[in-house]
Image (cartoon, rainbow over all chains, first blue to last red; front, side, top):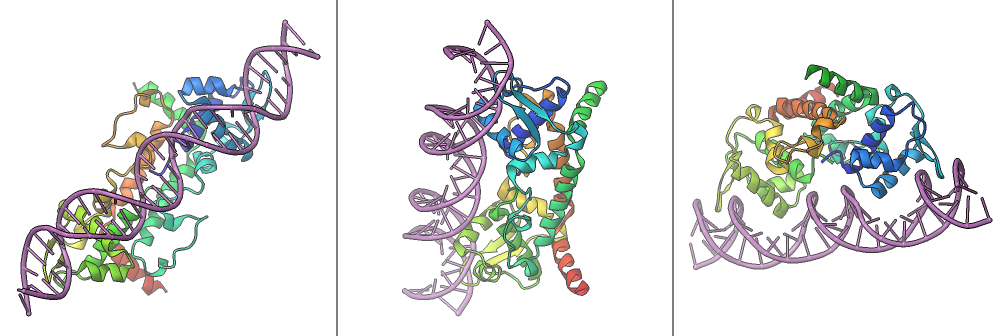
Length: 142
Length: 142
DNA sequence: TCCTTTCCTACTGGAAAAGTATGATTTATG
DNA sequence: CATAAATCATACTTTTCCAGTAGGAAAGGA
């Protein structure tokens, strides 16, 4: 599987922040409840988003998390990347991994490149705002 | 990672058979050597291709494996599927898996669908013959 | 009968995923 | 100032899957 629960949880968290972007700091506990995620596990995941500068936080009694940019300015790729590292369909095309020495003679390598391109095109072009808009249009259609 | 060594080995094996499609039955041992794969491990992998009817075989002294169709009539998707099962970027869009009960309210589900579509488009449209042709054109270009 | 090859099944070591558990630190509030 | 509620940090566990090894049975040609 390409995208694990870490990436999914991170994305759900970010979407939830997007939905409440004008409500000040949001508590992780509340989001975990709404999205039906383990609170402690989500804490761990969010720490990566924090380190990567994707969200800002305050501690203490009335603490919580908040987006830094507008939802339309986050791509889903940049979010998932914080958790999953460089996203690639095959080890062979990881930008952060070692270069395969059989690459030149390998008949499959061009395929991995094509898959990688197709994937990352979707990931780079889709924003958090898109995820929200798609849902709204879904409801209209139904 | 979406595609593991099983799928890759299977694909390399099938490409190798394609390259020698007019040479009768090919020995697994020789292919393992050429592709630098573990012989015993490859045996295991090929057994799936055999069960799925993707290749035919004979045993004994002059045994080996052979394609059943022309290289242009195998999609890479159908090969990889034999080893990896239904290929999906996220658990949520596996055709063979259980349906997620949060699907309706999930903001991410449409994204998984889009990724799935993009992936499978490449996988269904690419044939073994394409892999070979791409390599030939590569050499021309260089 | 031997040798080579495919075929079958069990086992193993290691890595990564998916969380749990524990507690420290910060901060608004009574 | 004490307390409660939140974030932050780390260590541990449990499970699952990947990748490969091992040993031999069955088949077929010489």
